[in-house]
Length: 458
Ligand code: ADP
Ligand code: MG
Image 1 (tube, helix red, strand yellow):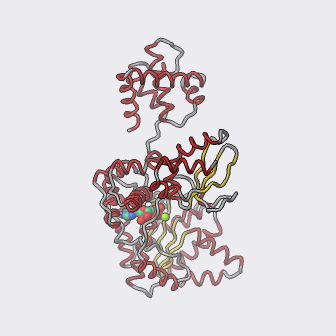
Image 2 (cartoon, helix red, strand yellow):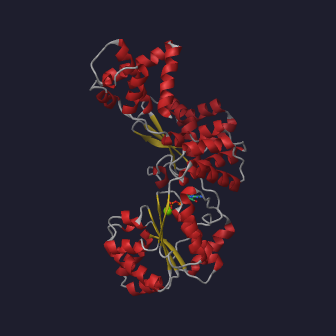
């Protein structure tokens, strides 16, 4: 059956498309009502899922009625029963291939790491040159610059950077580390995650080499510990960090720490540690603004040497507001597609390539909002959304609201029914199909509903 399905696909899409996307697809097996096929890369998997997923399922159903779903995964070519960890990775998460780092910088990183057996490798892309400064991060950036120029100067030790995920804390820390290593190679700069700090400490405890642990840490000139919130609840490690911290500061060494919250909000961290962390310079990185997102996208597109139209940049900056990492992921995926096809980036193309990411970022509409907007629009009372009244003037808007609730939220029919005055799921089902019918039959009505949808979506 699989051979026939492949044959059909090949006929349908043509030889070129087939060779580009589908040739490497392998059937692993059928589990229950699901056919599992694998492709060698995440990129191919996503492409096949979004472009051929429905067609694959339809062809399978023709061949074998028991197959109702097709699961496209990343996996080894030979049929196997177990899946690779990557196949389990959630969709729409870090799908984009990272841009290649500069080899020279990577070599530098390796050389520098050999010097300090403490430091985790530094990302060669995370330098001051590539950090885009804007209102939300200018203070943190200025502090980081200052510390890079003059480590351990009074008032800036420790430097405590905090902010939400994906806003550039790690990038700034690496930038400081690169700047110091490049400017003064003799300085021993150690960068590590709080997690790594803890593992090293526990390993030292186990092998009874805590003295060595302390000594090696105290030979560090600049200590950077990333994501300190990880130490919450890890009392022994906090204690050790506290001592290390004091010893280093007393010896005139620079400490830089990052966390997702300010020292005072890091409840669960020992008080005296919080106090000490807050007594140097505390700098927060705020959520991005539209302007900063524009500049970051522009800078990254230029760095990649790809011409991304202004309309696309504005579109992304408008849509993807969560953090810089996601913004970067979306842009990287566009760039990967552009490179692959040798085609220019366009707004339409971007919307298509990024449809899953964009959907995830669509503002979640609540049933309450839908009810409110629809009631307002048809000039009925909000309570009539849940009332038992059956008059057409009330019942029709209620059906529209149910229809929109089904379309715009991920609620199930019974859940939607409950929110509309405890109605049965069959009532919701009926409303959904009734409204769809009416929209087919009556263009003006369809336009009305579409207008409501657009108002709710933006
Ligand atoms: P955090 O450590 O705060 O979670 P990161 O430092 O890992 O965030 O940043 C996430 C991604 O966003 C990285 O690839 C980083 O290079 C990028 N990034 C964040 N802020 C900026 C900025 N201001 N300019 C350029 N790139 C940025
Ligand atoms: Mg980080």
